[in-house]
Amino acid sequence: MSQISPTLKANEGNQIFTVAAGCFWGTENIYRKHFGNRGLVDGKVGYANGVVANPSYVEVCKGTTNHAEALQISYDPELVSLKELVKFFYLMHDPTTLNAQGPKNRGTQYRSAIFYSSAKDAVQINEVEAEVQAEYYPNHSIVTVKEPLEQFWDAEDYHQLYLLKNPEGYACPSHYLRTSPKVEGSPTTSA
Image 1 (cartoon, helix red, strand yellow):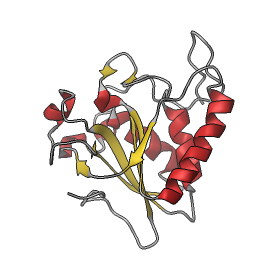
Image 2: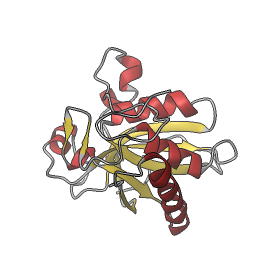
Image 3: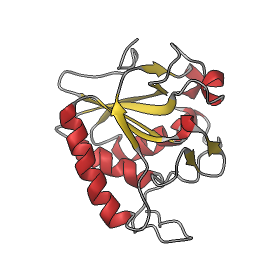
Image 4: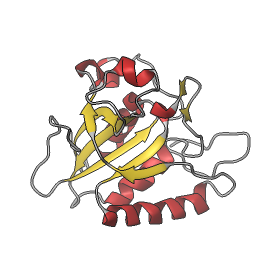
């Protein structure tokens, strides 16, 4: 059992960031688009925490393993900060929906979650969440789960870079960058 993907590329001095925001394909795709040329070193989709060793996609989709579909990235903190990555996380999906993203992704495997690596990271995550809650979600409670990263299992190979390999594949409609506060009854705008 490992906290870090065994296939994730990371250089000396790189940091690790693990998030769940619904479908891991869309989460990986939007992070690569926004940070691929400014700090993101590598990314792997997989299954975070949970109660089963080395779960399969089919097992996780049943919702009985308590894993979250997650993205784990390595990043260069000289080029992008943890706070920037966390704020982006809160704005690239809807962190106010419990165990759901978009019309299809329902269940605990699709929960909004940040899996932190240290107490120092947890403090920064909480600070950013408070700022984003006040500015972007003033009338909606953020329900993102924040917990220590205990384990990370790589998803099967066909899930890695899925939307890059399958540009017509399913992309969760909740994965876009919010640029204004969430208003009752309508989504925030995208950039």
